[in-house]
Length: 374
Image (cartoon, rainbow, N blue to C red; front, side, top):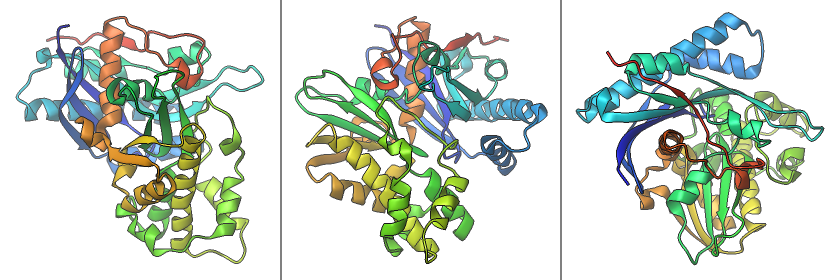
């Protein structure tokens, strides 16, 4: 199988930057380079306003859509420059964009929908590279949740015969991929919040984007009453397939939970309890399927030393490693996934999303926007 160079792009739930990966893809996926382009404050503010679903207007949506495409194109230009490549060297870009709203299908039969910003027309025009985008929509049209999609890539990259494999992606939202040793009946779903609530709380009380290495959480004390109030969230009891995002787990959700607890909890103790919430929900979800195996951690939360330590303590029968052991830095697994999804789309190969999204069948995922060569 001939190998080609692809670029994968994503801005995740944490909105901490545009992750960009350069990968050689053929029979395997080899990451050659990666970088993160910071999101300017004005774009971040617009995205947060859109995700909060307040004071919306079509002009803000349209302007942000184009601004993100320009930012993504800058990331592409930077990675090409770093590796002395031209647009003609790249087969395609796989661009996830930035999710501003994700509404899974409802049990009453109502169809779900998903919205990502980053105008693929503009991205293809600015880079002169064919761009594949809108990866979630066809899965939802087939009855799926449209998320999480990355478990299909986890299975491609990390599974080995003879061992139970659990992949834990600690992004803004945590999702897990579960591949049994005999490779039968894989599954995966969003377990709940990972970094999103801790980041909200850190920004509010420390004025920082995130809790570096989880040191602030480690300084606090676990509040059992607050933890119980958080765990009472109905989402945690839902059976998979399921997916979630900022639409549920946001500042308003956190404020409501803290109001339920008296006396008031210190800011550091809330942060400690949020870390425990993530550790408990992900470990419980994994233990419901596997009693032991290998645990591969990826996502920005892999750098949260305290959180990963708590997960390891709750999953003591698992051999823990990170995606770096497989050649992909934890911060860039999702970007690499969308490069791979782009390669699957151009090859017109369906991706096996149904075990993870609940779709009725496999789909050829993504819309193609031809790069306009100068």
